[in-house]
Amino acid sequence: MSLRIVLNCERKLYILETDPPKTPDANARASELTSFKKYEDDARDVKCIIMANMTAELQRLHADMEVRPMIQCLRDLYQGQPQNSGIYVIKVNMSDITSWVMDTRCGSHICTSMQNMHECRQLTEGEIQLKVGNGALVYALAVGTYSLSLPSGLILHLNNCLFVPSMSRNIISVSCLDKA
Image 1 (cartoon, rainbow, N blue to C red):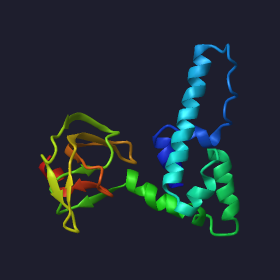
Image 2 (image 1 turned 120 degrees about the horizontal axis):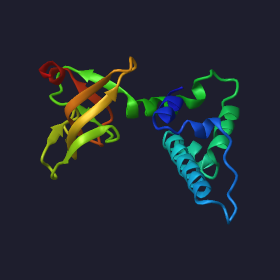
Image 3 (image 1 turned 45 degrees about the vertical axis):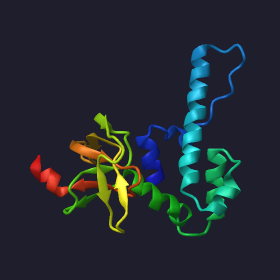
Image 4 (image 1 turned 135 degrees about the horizontal axis):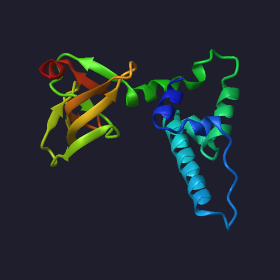
């Protein structure tokens, strides 16, 4: 289910739900070629999302497959097991990309993707450093406003949100919400 949510958010769920278009003829119109190219690009992105969340062994087994046969192969591979077990690795890893945690001690909102960022300012190297739980330093690469769509349909604008791609979680700072 989480994979479908991510693909829906990325507007690529149609890759799983519709048949691939036929390869256009050499004399096809530009719009047909553009549409086919978009499908190919989106299918590649979906394959990468799925492959990135597999074990190395599953990656090796499915590297040469297209998306839909890959998913069918995974279903067959995990047939007879509980429904979620076949995509467990995908669910765990994909949730980090789009899920957010609330933190009362974090002094800044932190995101791991710039997809919904606007009014961004690139930071110079080392301009903002954060110390994480294991003592390591990580660097923010940009700061801006992140527009977080809530399940209710409301949009929460997280001002001064730091883009830190090396973080494993997106963080909403409760103390920053309190200031707003």
